[in-house]
Image (tube, rainbow, N blue to C red):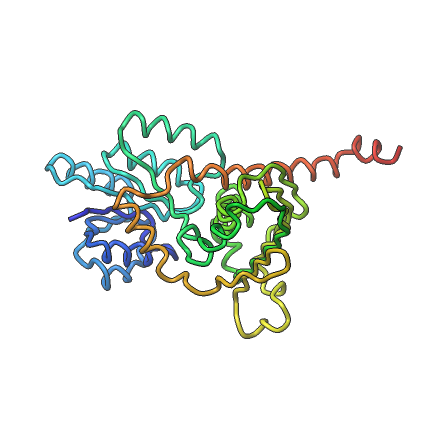
Length: 313
């Protein structure tokens, strides 16, 4: 039986990982979270050990390893800025890692993880579930041999309450900002369907929303992301909290359904040895990191007195 450990058991996405572990016939042996609101474990793995101190969690995993009961996979659902360290921990503990998005905040962290993969012989897989969505696979197949450039518009609004800004998700240094936190899957999907980005423009970067322009190998993409419910379309407000829209050459791509079981599909692929590794994740991390840096540079140029003086001449 495949054995799992879980970091971030109290997180929003953790129940999807627990369900996936069950479906693939796995056993969650031990979980960790600094918060103890983890009653959801009772419906999945009530016999799993649980710790609120990382040191005790680490010691327990090491004890299992020394008893010949090592963990096969450490699933990582912790805040974004901790993913890199927790992946390193998993590999150094003799396990493979399954990491939520975004794998890391900056592309150079991928290079460091690749070195640890080589040193340990263990592998990091990340959850890129949109690549497994039937509508996205069909879209990729449709445009695989296209000779023309396509016009793509992406809008994703996932409204969040005031709690969002009091949590780590509202801290730019921890989440990477809106484009990273809620957009990285979509940027991966765009690269997957239309090829890697060759141009990346930052048009808007605020705590609540972000917007920009991408040129992929065979598509020009305008995108807008928001966590502000006031950005929901008028006909949606009061009815739904989330709005997704992708149009290609003016035609809507229907993919609003089919998200529920994509974590389970991801786990099935990972335990079968077909998970998405470091090479697959790099394109989306490049996009969000470059966007973040471009937005910072643009803001600095706008605010710098010399830049303002230069623009007036």
